[in-house]
Image (cartoon, rainbow, N blue to C red; front, side):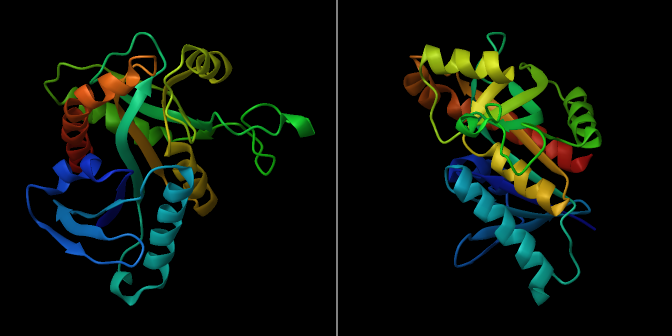
Length: 239
């Protein structure tokens, strides 16, 4: 049986996935989680809290837990998924569309003062962490099997500990990293997964345009965006 770890930064991002039943809620001192199965896939679903530090801590916590805890002695993590909402950087995206991150980067990583390019962590040889192609292809296949009214695109997702709502910052992220979307956790998950050699997927539904109207449109479109994303993630699990 395969085991997927699914993480949202906020409770509302994962609740639709577990609300139909079949999950047991388990307490954990740091990250309480839902434990259940869909078909032949064991699912661990949890909430990291917002931001890159919280996400990195959550990912490593469960990797270590599954390596050391007798309760998970028969499991190893086959895939870690970060699902949630994001702001659109690409002008072609609309609220409700979904971006599959084939590359992840940190738009607020800046060690230029020491001679490194913007976005590069000096401990790594690239600005970007790349999602395994087999995982990206799996999402595309799942999307093709659904009757949808939204667009699925593949591209770079940029992460940073900032809610992007200014034209200047949005243009910086687009021009520097050629990102399709921005959010606050995905690249840290990608980094920790890469360090542990575990396949990962960051998949985000567009809730706002990352512009001056972002605070208002985020609240208005978030629920619909999560609904689209949940349907697709369920299909990915079936694949």
